[in-house]
Image (tube, rainbow, N blue to C red; front, side, top):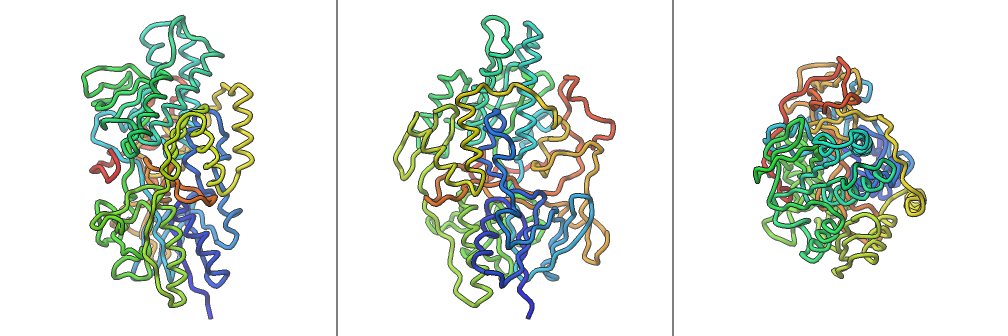
Length: 524
């Protein structure tokens, strides 16, 4: 008798934990396949430390093959899902097409960058949802400080040393906090003109920093940012972006060469392509995470609208906290469905939040106890070490070295501006130099055909951008989503800044119009 086939689309927080839970429950009695564009799970809470030069990129990645030995890994990006034929069609990393049959399907496609109809943002801003974007920001910031130190003075020098972050959620707050410390360290090696200091701005239309959190934690973060020199402006956002700077909604024009977009996420369009009932871009599911009318299909993470049993009539927000926990429930329920056991509904209970503000500063409320300063910093880093499924010793070693040694102020130039456009559907994959883009086609017959009705879709992890440092369990498990694994749409790269090092090859792809979407729950 053949083993049941289970396909998991996406290795983010939801997909990764589903695979791990299911592998332990099945014990070899099922064939588990994980479809993902990369061979690693990305621990997103520490990504700002990669951009700030504290951690090396591989420290925040966990090998899928190394930690999921009983799961078959298929590298590829999902294109079309044939629900009636129970087949997932995908494109491999070298353009090859394939398909996977299933008896149970888990859709953990996560989310993609949310763009707003603001002129110039798609062309001049960069997101912060994957390693390529973090590496680009690290090199770009280093380069701007180095160029500013040689420019002397004037508007150009000032613009190079001004860094604008839009979105005061978890990611934006941590990027600004870590960024100010990073650039202050850089100017020690590359002094600027007398009296000049790098300037970081944090913008948001919300009334306060970290609006999702308790006011005490929000106040702690706001105070630390302002004491550090970050220009925090609430109730303000970008009205227009240009090559020379940004026009703010209050009428002020700020000269800058750096615009980091951290305003939130929207569900991956792969879910919408299925033609099933949706809730604001998310696939409607039952409390057991099954799709109504399709008991063989489960969905979790940002791609799923899961009823919140603690708040009747509401759905769980798009956060890593829920993605990680839903992955565990999905794994147990799939195993139960194979043996005829009763499925259990998804319920949750918050255990606190942690926000790393760089250095020894942080804001946290484990078990509802508000902390700040050194105690919060210790709790935050201790929690991350316990939560990571790997690389704990390496991460701790990097933290120790950063505490006693100066950071390396070098730019490697591995990721260019045009290779990480804001409106990419795959922030976890840098665009290749020859601009080749894989177009998803209907491969139901094993060959190429017409593009699927839903267009090229993505695969990826669950967990929204803004609540990714939520304490979910005292056990050593990650709590934040990975960027959604998506198919890349053929699009022209963002218009490069006027720096020579960012000039792109003639074969660079062309950009399509940026995706517009209404703000999702929990996003601004």
